[in-house]
Length: 60
Image (tube, rainbow, N blue to C red; front, side, top):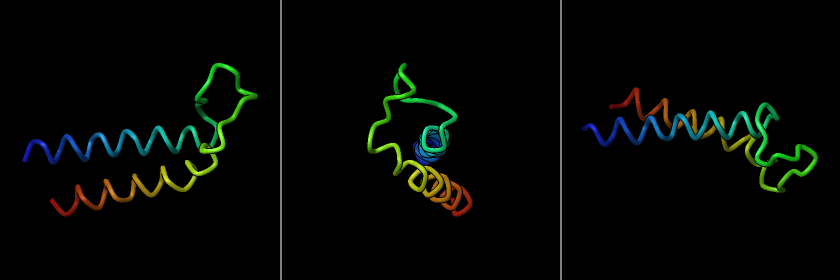
């Protein structure tokens, strides 16, 4: 029971982080000109992870 809440909280935080990095509010490196190719996928993976975390929280 507690492990489920912890898992959902971690998914929520990871989704928020991925969304912020994907849309440019945070950067992965100290040099903002250097963007990793995987960052462009964070724009859709972050909101998807947030959606899954919210659905799992509502379902439990």
